[in-house]
Length: 338
Image (cartoon, rainbow, N blue to C red):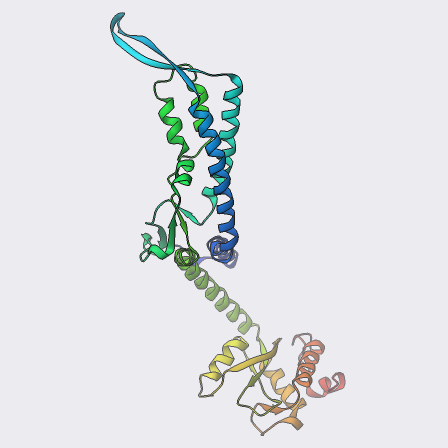
């Protein structure tokens, strides 16, 4: 495993993109289960029908038995029986076309993430690949015998290729069009959720690690540049139109969680925020602008309509150019309209 802390931000973002793509791949069978199941059922039905035609034609192939001398250094020591394919070009073309059609359906089925060849499914962990434990009968359905036969059509081809002399190339080319498979199970909706959530675990954990590193670095940068937030919070336990206006160099959501954990009955909700340089400085200026609405001196609570607070914060952010201009209270009052 890479030490993410040693990577620069570009490298971390590249890893983040990679993990997001993997997570999206594993999330797809969960989110799009019904569509994938319909695709599987449609392709399976078409495959079984096409394979039945192929099989019926294939069984009509005729082979002539011939004997061939077996020799060593010019001395005959026995005979070997071989088969010569004896059929029309028209029939061979028909069989070849049906074989290719079967191959298209087989490829589509095998690419479907709901299909699995085994119930001992692996997933990645920090200690390497491990089997997913806890898969039960409610997580999968065994495919029909007709579908298994169609998916295993190479077996039929292989048996007829053995000991064939004339026509061997034709049979081997048919076999090349197919991926021999023993895929026999389709995951139920519960099974897909169980399996793919397990598949995602490691990548979600690593994604979270990278996000925390990037957030920490961003915080350090913003702290160095004195960039923070002026936020507006509400709480169900407050009287109507009562809001807390404060500042933080973390995120407003984190600050809301911190305040909720200080014994309040209801959670704090972030109503709005502005990202601004010298956040604490402009917090105090906003407090001064809204002092007539202050519930209690030296407290950050204001009895005022939320729309007026939003209007005030947006204007302060705009005229100060997000805090890059450090304006006095008088300068702000000249530009702002409450």
